[in-house]
Length: 373
Image 1 (cartoon, rainbow, N blue to C red):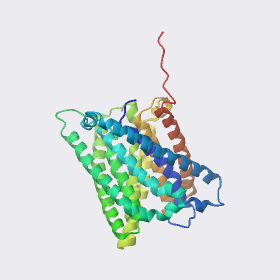
Image 2 (image 1 turned 180 degrees about the vertical axis):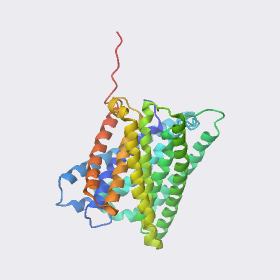
Image 3 (image 1 turned 60 degrees about the vertical axis):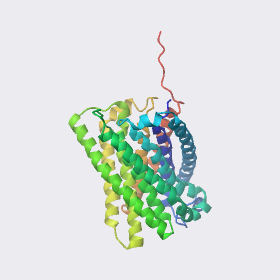
Image 4 (image 1 turned 90 degrees about the vertical axis):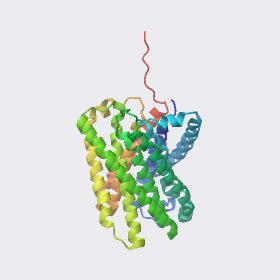
């Protein structure tokens, strides 16, 4: 299949699956250090950990494998004369260029989470390494800003070309949310006050820019669909679920930055953090229910088919977003065995859905070709 930057979503989705067990253990398991590690599970393995640890290990390894593979493919593709320019000039498809940035932002979170879990010695050195990580993070932030401007021009100055936008149009918002989350993680992990301050500034900028674009484009998409009332094509239906991981990214970013401002600046933003977690969790749950009802025929008749299209990765990201929001809600606001049980269930379901979509993505599950007589 020809290369497209959307192939990076395979790495993004499995990175999310790797984070799910880590977040669950970080907030619900007792641990000695700042981050939970394998040492904290010594002598305490049970059915839950025997499930969570292998899922996290396999997903982490696959994430780095896919990041390397897709990066090599991207460089080869970008070197082809006119390939990148033609892709960026297409306003209906060029949001796909944000997929590599979202995936690389996820890599930062995988390093700060699952990698630190499996390498306890590295976990202790995370604050030191974060001081060096601020530089590539700043470059990622600047690159995202530059690409956002380049791509935005094609949406506003189309030379009369009509474009029907869909929810894949929010991939840039997804990228800003992922960069915000990575920055919030660096802010909280850094022990150097100067590094933490710069990371927090970049994070607040990413949150502000991302939420602004989210509000404008989200409102446009909702109004557009209400006015047109058209039923989206089958490959576009799963794209509606991108709203859920976006909500999760901004909610957790705001929560972490609120913790930093309270600890370092003495500014209590706990009410904003509460709204970010609980309200966005409720909004995400409502949106999922709405989409499940609206697209129930797609789940029954289309998802089980061997045909692959990139928007199917969004189903994994939905489960990742919901699980993270559920864990944060359980550990900070509403301790409930239902939320905890849902976190385990969603982790298992995300691993299963990813496996199925990945098999279709790699061609191990192929559409049946009809043989003409």
